[in-house]
Image (tube, rainbow, N blue to C red):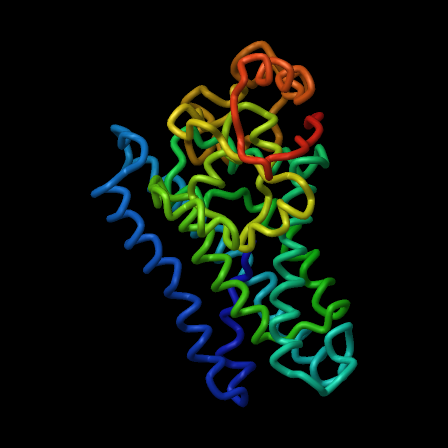
Length: 318
């Protein structure tokens, strides 16, 4: 979901603090990973898995590969495009000189709105879901899951955002600052932690660990909810916000990819391209439980949820 903008150092030397900001952006994943890894170790929400180190190495290996490839393919293009947009005053946010601070934060808000839409599309478009299911097939979600994405998903995302830059008129400042927010928030809400009662208040504004745990549930109506990345308001506005009455009961992963082979680096890379016969279990993705059927069962059991947990999303089809 992020662009590894190494090219900024050489292309943005005339923009004051930007090179330093980019340096912070490049070290932020390491800082967040280390801090949250310690938090998970000291006070985990779920019991720590036996092969936690091996699990982390696999997820981080695919993340490192993604960062290098995406940086080489899209880093310079992102910087050049954003500089051209600003120089030519092209795009929605470049129409006026007034309210620079307002335009800056408007750009961040638009980027976050786009990330909600992009995430929602990954659960609706069969081709996109094939790549995105690499992220959801992790049966032991922790802070390293925040980095577990297939290269194909990153490439499609980076290509679309490259087109979005001139449409919205985004500057490299907005892109780098928003990337930092995404890095911090995705590591935070994927971590195997809980904020306790504080989660209830924080999720009024931001995506929290208890909120995102629901999204990684292997029960599809829960998987198809809580798409927001930074601000939780998007799920509330789109009526895709959902909470679990008992977060400890959530089971992560995908039924079709429970076999150990799909948790290896080779298996993760192959996941988007496998056929139904190669998947574990007998039920293909298209026959996973549909929201309408399970909703009835949920109501019959009188499971209570917060009033804001409204409509459920429709099912995926692959």
